Length: 43
Image (cartoon, rainbow, N blue to C red; front, top):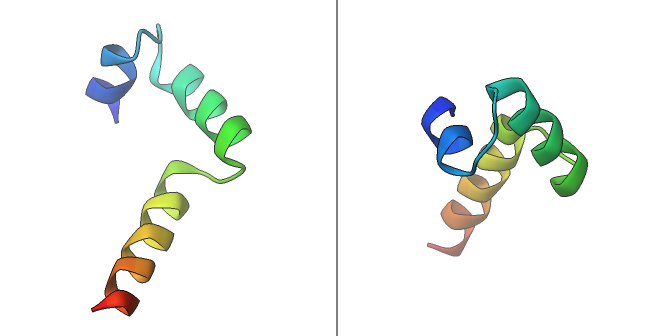
């Protein structure tokens, strides 16, 4: 997550985490798990 936050221009990983959680209404890890579950259900 550190490299993603830096690539997106955030000064810290925690600022990326806060912005992601605010916008996606979900923490990054929970968001990834939901995507994996949906992808698995399609197969």
